[in-house]
Length: 144
Image 1 (cartoon, rainbow, N blue to C red):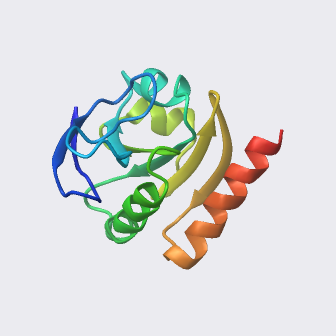
Image 2 (image 1 turned 60 degrees about the vertical axis):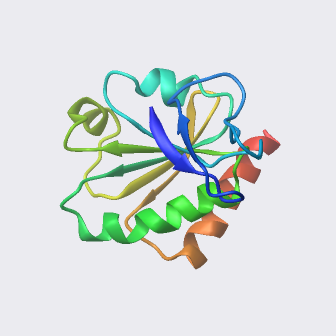
Image 3 (image 1 turned 90 degrees about the vertical axis):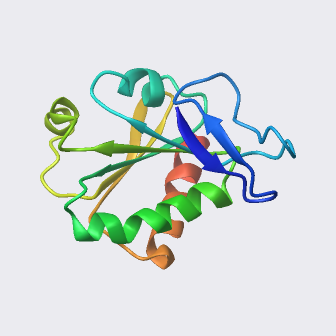
């Protein structure tokens, strides 16, 4: 369970990794940014079975570019509250996922929908590059 601050009323809310529907603020009932952690044991439940599109961030605490891109990803998740889930996977703590996705560089970003990875971005990028990449990935996926 992660804690997310509501962008509207600033109330802190607990948000589960997996649930039906989308998280809403317990105070003002607005959609919350769905930002959670996952690892080897719960990736399938949190990402692959998600009803919403998922932006996966494979990162590590020692990685400078990962720390630079994290606020950008959180901003994108906030902008798309109720439409997108951001799942952060610590690559050091999830060696099986790192092997499964052949992660050779971090951060590695992936967009998932209906259990399928539909786009991958390797390396940090500014919001001006990540926003159109995400929008294109979501549009490409939903058009199919």
